[in-house]
Length: 119
Image: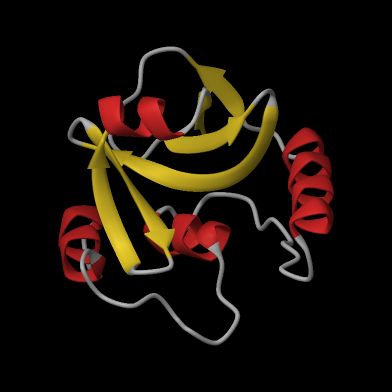
């Protein structure tokens, strides 16, 4: 079984499943025990509505202090629409350029709403 660190390091810098995969697919690739969250890529509005509903119905423990493998949801103005996984002071997440690793400070500059969850 591939360890979390090995899988994370292998994904960073590579395209992420170009065929309809989304940020939550990356979360479940890295944290298999995370709940499955349906996502919609039809439109940003529909994606946001689906993401909020799915987050609300799943049993995720919100945490203030992040540890490796915690789920990080990101957004703006109390609207969460993106997710990644915390790892060694940063967040691994899927972007249009592929899988990226950004320090948590950079994440806070891009998104004014950031929450951590533990499965």
